[in-house]
Image (tube, rainbow, N blue to C red; front, side):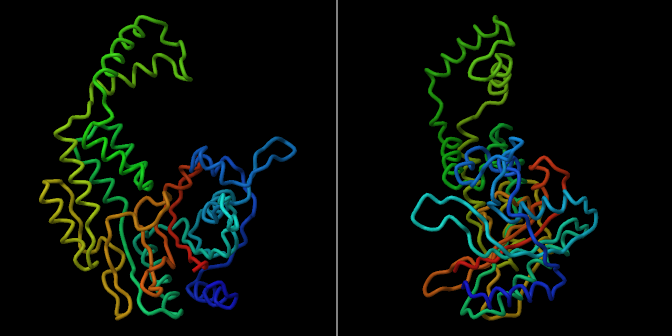
Length: 349
């Protein structure tokens, strides 16, 4: 699907919906990537230093470049933008380290979030209908539902934050659930040792440091664990509830009822209205619309709406478009928070 004609065709469809084409800078400050993705992401970046010692990098993602452009130009009105280009990441295999020909479209600084969410999905469906495909599945979810669920459960606050933060990392998230369920990472011998150290440290200078932390920071963390401990019985039940929630997968028309039945079953004070999702139905025999409580995309950008469109390729389904709402992105970059929703077309199919 790397045809130049197809790219032009898709961009034409996007522009017909009122999105204005913009050019994005190929280089940006590394700090914005590292603030969002952490130091572990550095190994995937093509970075270098300018004459003033500022660390720069080739853009590893076009969405970040787009929202930075909006904030740095001090726009204060709604902007509908689209762009195409390359993102640059190291892959550490024999394949190219360049993500080729990514096409994206976004609505930034909007006030009517529900309307803009629907417009992004409608634009995605319009693109889908203009290509050759046999069958497609539009999966819709919302990260807010997962966050609400975690907030309602009897879990230590530090663990609630941990589960939310690592929701996108499937392997580590499953490790966290296992630890929460079994307390397998708690060794009674180590606990007693820690208590002895805790008593000794309380008698020492609180400003003294070890491993980059002051004694006060370590003691405060230990106090929090003592006052808000993990409990085996609630851990097992909470893990069961989380796993059951993440298995909810149904037709979008049944989603609110399915979710409300689930929350009622576990007496959780959460209610999902029938108009909660931006789209309820679609007159197309070839496109199914599903609700999925699993993260339907693999990006930690998103703060509420998430969606993906997968198209049938032989016997399997492959991702064609993915997107969602990422209002917290600029805030996480240390910048002014703006409303943002968008999607990207995978041209590498």
